[in-house]
Length: 491
Image (cartoon, rainbow, N blue to C red; front, top):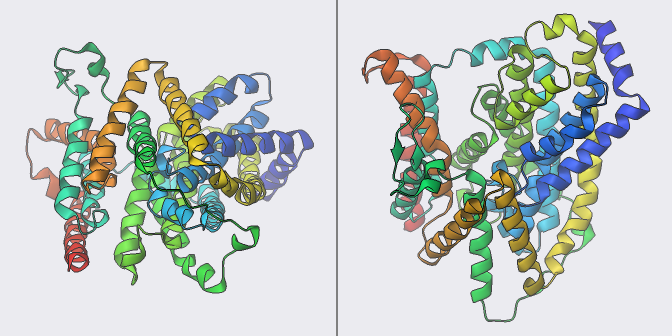
């Protein structure tokens, strides 16, 4: 084992590999910060450059892109209120208010520390517990996935605040939106109204761009009063002693939840971030701060983001089963560069595996350095006049929507959801429940259908699985706590 680590470290610290990891990490931060350009897209764009590299070097470069992009998504979420990546959607709940309060640098610095910590902790798990966690992940049956989705939807009660009824309506609208298009089990089309384009349904990213970016642009256009210039000082990015203490537990909670959710195939960072955010909010003594600019909220979400990366790589490397959408792309990239993930990977190519492990930790430190530079410079974006900044955001939003499938249909989807988001904002309908519905609706429906097919339409299967039963009980408790918190906030 020690010999493998020494050989792996020797490969990882070769100057050429260090340069490739750095390029991948910097590129990942930039890709993640651009609204509409996802981590998956960054890996795909990087793939042609890895064809002629040694598989070990190519894998390290791809890992840099993966880790860097997960942190990069927080930059646009804090500065513009637009999640750079889908998994950064929860970051803007507290990150964007902090940016509007002139604390953007502090918010991004918190995100950086949390991302670094989540990446390191998930890397430790990836190295030492990969086979055990992968085996646990395989115990999840369809009904357990359904219960996990219901647990995620139960968060709606907490994130809606005092607008509980409107939050429920928003969440139900999100679930309805997720049903548009071709149903995956039977292949039937639903709610297309004879329009062929609707059979493809709605991609998540155009919906996010519409609800957050386009809506924000419309709100800013409506503001007629003179905008207040947000002041930013480099000296204010560092955390005070009390602030540093306050984010320690959120980072640890985020890392644990991110790793556990990450190893479950088919889940991913977006689900994990909202689950962790909700749990921390329920446990916190300062619930009223969340949603208004709590550093703890940013810390837990960004810790989850990068903890999921290591967690999702566990089943990808150990079993050849992708943990989320990004690792599915990573899996395809590995096969293209000549790497065959699975149980034999550790025996057949230990030099590749341990060079990847060593490189993973080096990449986290590279991200720390790159992210610190971004923390210092990026908040000055807020000093750009809104009449210049907002058109730039609109252009990036349109490009990002179009780039998903090279389709103007997705651009139209972003625009329509921008109008929907504008209406919701004006009438105090929270946007987060709608996004939760869009994300978790398909997961709940498809796995419930699979479970009922396997059980012969026996609905009691929900309560016969220990994992499912535990998650259902947690869902009920989450709803109860959410309703109590909403009632206290209303009063």
